[in-house]
Image (tube, rainbow over all chains, first blue to last red; front, side):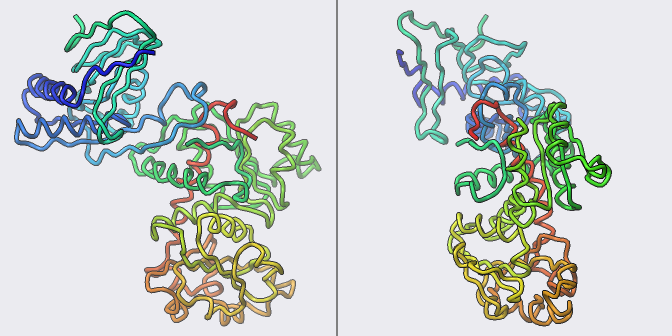
Length: 190
Length: 312
């Protein structure tokens, strides 16, 4: 197993900075926009992006957190019931633009569960997805609208984002089984 | 941290970590009950059979709502309208139901050890909703959730439980739970309601109600069952109330921030005065609300995962 740090703290912040800019560029500001982070690490990422947007646009962006554990489709395979983290969305999402935020987009099943959870909370005008890393290997037709880093990975590889808020440090780690240099490209894959 | 039990038959076999996990999960479940759409698909397609051989309002409604909020299918079995009336045995009833592939039985029965009795005859998860005078684990858990919400931590908390101790499964489950979580429990009642060897459970036992009230953070009153009067266990309801009833005056003996609890249904003017039941220190209705959350948590932890990982 080879372990490589793809981004350090500065690299992560730069990526988040670009995501914040892309979001406000695409949505022409942040009017009617809310950020909802998917537990666990999507939550501090959403909070960081919100702060970056607030600095640039001088407006507060509401941030919520979503626990998708009650909507998973893999209960029969995970083992014991997953620990709940709790959903906290203290504002109405009706008619809003919801930007879901997660750390790594992989099979797409977490996002599918998040969409189900979101629909139970209200009817947003539109839902978009922002992720720090897209590592491919989708099992459902799910796509991200905003991507920090597109990564070519093998299925057996392990991509992990560590954050100060949850793990005490900022780092994006790739663990791969031996050889072959990984090709990473900034932004969405062509 | 995962819940490594296949059944919830009692508090006695749970660890403090198990209890904390259930309470933490219950807090998250409360949020579901406050949404406009009070449902999550966690137990979709699972069948839960509510096997109630004794009457119940709170416990049964609470379990049924908890099951529905988790999207499970529910089957309500009521003893009075079943073939038990024709003499079918408990084990035969379970063997027959078992062929319809239930995932869980929630059982209330007048005999202690009902879950243990039917355990060899079923593959389903078993939840004890009250077995005779033995245990009522979800009641103790919802009591604990309420206490934790109002008081924060259990360590060193002074708790008084008063009433018909010898016939109460609620008190047994509470003694186990509060003991495991580090609280100090005192039980109180007329001598005719106090079984011997209570101290062996790690509690202080007394028949002096007013003395016992001093400095208590939590006062839990138990229901007096009217049937016990005909057996001569107490002379009259009025006399019970005069000696062991929780009045406003007596409540002042407890801690300034005391909370008053009762598993329900309350006999107003017997266990406590109406003013106390409806007063500012009473958390009785919070207990009922927490009952749904705790039962959702228990069902989720027992059924929301794969069969292979759980232990016995």
